Length: 237
Image 1 (tube, rainbow, N blue to C red):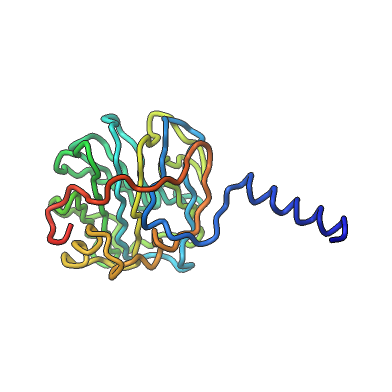
Image 2 (image 1 turned 60 degrees about the vertical axis):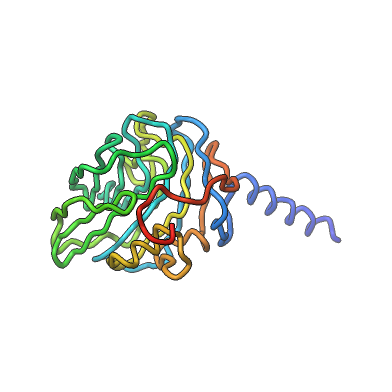
């Protein structure tokens, strides 16, 4: 092989390794492990759609011993740093942000095992629903008529206080995250049960854990799952 070509290949390989940017990966049997509190550890996700969002459902499985607040899923657009944010405020409450506005939900207490959380929002009505471990909190409303922007930076494990950055260690996630899915529509109660059971009948069309375009930052690593069942109350879990 010519020396010039070899140098080019080695350069490309080095860039791939240092950025840890992955092609589409099936993470169905894996988790993203955040081993410690940090402002430098997170996962960047790439959306499968390029249009604005006027309806959505976003779900995350998480396993942590944290009792302080922490961010799970953050979407920022230019000028809207909390265009969507799912944020655990305590073991018995969560916040959902849309377009920089927030709603606080009282939730069932998070367990020491795996927990499943989903937020759904519809621009047409402004209705926001939060589900934790299969139990929906009373619905609330915000941002009727709004649409989430088309230049999203999507991050797991940190709260974006600027477009793609300005993280705070006391909002960072420590633990394991899996089965991140997002749809550009509202899941029905039956579809929510499928999502909780991690069924491949209802894979996300905005974010799909079994076909994910992602970049690891800091100390986050991908590891095999040790436990497959969520602490849910649906059939088939």
